Image 1 (tube, rainbow, N blue to C red):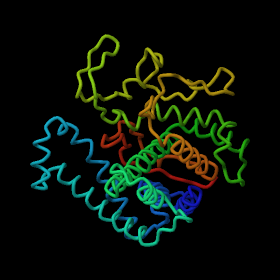
Image 2 (cartoon, helix red, strand yellow):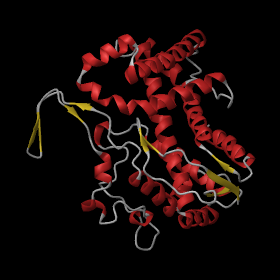
Image 3 (cartoon, rainbow, N blue to C red):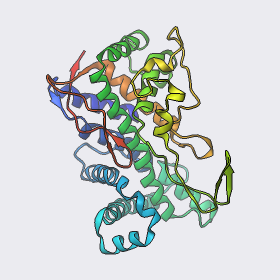
Image 4 (cartoon, one colour):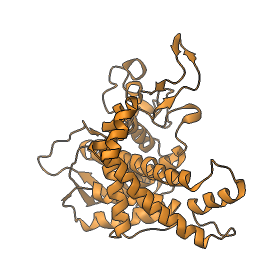
Length: 346
């Protein structure tokens, strides 16, 4: 499933013939189609109106969602903005409605064609559980929300990591060359990379980890809510409190990462001989504990396959005179500012 999308993306890169291009409009549909295959059971063509709609909703929601966090603490303002379809909150509500309307149609089609002996995708599996369990917590309304979560968390965050990776490779060509040497040694130029290759590619793994630390795509983790009064390290957190973990602060704390915490340096995750990954307890891009990201394994696999497949076939660099900008824009995640790169066949 993932490799089909990667192959289509590589073909689009090849068509650019090394000319300067803005890659985000190509990467985003590729990522979202992986999720569409998982939840809807179908791949969509690049120019499919439904695919274009989904990508637009995801993109607009991602860029605007970060602006409404304050409204959590003033819910009456949120209700007013929703009622009048005003401001960012109103726009987000409309985007969610558009997404849910499409998902409802898909759920209806799945219900009409559901075969218990042939589960095609996530929606089929969930509908079957609804029939079996008869529990209120298993319903079509929850299914609609879960599909939206799949696209937001499973598509957009991975897209952000790959987007940062491409920008970073264009800026740090020496790192790019080391990764390509490792690819040539382990995978070669002709065989398609597999997830199993990652254990033999420590430098590539370290670089991906460093990008996810250095440009943490989810700087502030999802809000949590205390169900009872809790004491933690001498601090009392009252029942009903909102709790947010600052992953950016953890990933950039000099106490954990040294005086060069703000610097991009993949070697910090490697042993002295460069052959093994050194994991830090302070590396938590997927959070930790029982509420850590359930899609961690899928995301790691997807990122690895995308970046290795791209660098196996192409060299990435900036157009003449371009200056890399690593500040980023904060929405639902930290996204690179728009940039152009040249992608040339190796």
